Each structure stands twice: as structure tokens, then as C-alpha cells.
Length: 224
Image 1 (tube, helix red, strand yellow):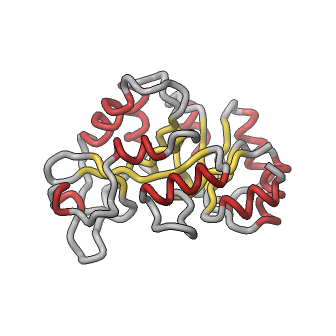
Image 2: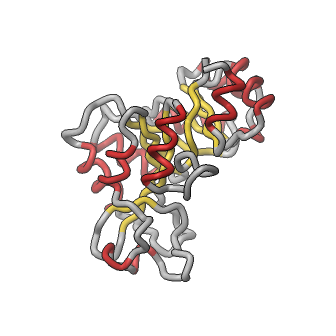
């Protein structure tokens, strides 16, 4: 049965990527929680989806103490997710203002996970080099490449990099794509599905997990 993964927490019941959203997702029974990690001007890891704050400031140019109160540190967010496993999306892409080609954020994430309970994490990113770096630093931490579609062009680099999972956009995912990933030995986590009928279809195809904004709806639809 496909696991239900709360996208930025239970973001329809609380503000996304906040402690309230994470604790609510656990209360609802989500198996996993997806969240987004960035660095502040003083090197603190915090959880925020966009590179910019609502007032236009860049997260990476702002000291942690000057962030809005609802933005949690990575440490606080992980603590709030106890009871679920965590899909940690590292935000570090060339088109964003906080892009760091040296991927210091990756090293900081791995450092934070060191000493925490094993088996509760998966690190994902749209930038293949970021998860490649994760594999080099901590080969025991599962990694997944975030992609739009599952095909030869995405499966081969995922397998070659030693990543155990591929995370495609659910709109472009097909049953043949799931089967192709399976033949390559990959787990499949689809994002972001809010339609219960589509979730049932994805689960029937054998995906391992479904990322959703409405974990309560999908839990009810899938009977989990």
C-alpha cells in the first residue's frame, strides 16, 4: 500500500512548513512528512519553501533571528515530525538567489542528521549534484531525485548515482513509468496528488508513496 506523505506538513490545516503543520500531519496519521530546507545568512538551517520571504527578503541574506516567528529551524522541524519519517528536500538550484555550487547546505543537513535515529530520513532534490553529494557524505541515508517524468533520461542517472528512489510529478507519471522504475530497482514517490481517485490509481500501480496537501483525504481514500 502506498504511504501518504504530508506535503510541507498538513498545509491545508495549518500554515505550511511550520511546527503546527508537522504535528498535525502526525496526528492525522501520515506515514511521512515532506519539508524544505534552506540556509540563513548566519548559516542556520531553516524550513521554508521559497527563496524569498513574504516581505521580499531573501532567506539566505537574512539572519535567523530576523526571520518570521513561524519559520522553524531544521532541528525544531525534525523534532516536530516525530512519529513520521521525513522527506527532506534540499533547496539549492541555480535559478534561485541562494544557490551555492559548493552545496554547503548539504553538508549541514548531513551534520544535523548525524546522531539522530537511522531509517527516518530521505533526502531529495531537483539538483542531481546535491543528492550525489549526500551519497558521498552519508551513503546510508536514502536519497531520491525529484523529476518531472520517469524515463530513460531520469532513471539512468538515478541508478548510476546509487540513489534508491525517484520522485516524479504525479501528473506526468504513467503505469509504464512505474514499471520501468521498478525494473531498475527504484522506489517511486509521486508528488503532489490531492485527488483521491488519482491516488487510488497511483497506489494500484504500485508507487511507494504519494505526497499530498490533504493527507486526511488520501488516508481515507486509501483506507490507511
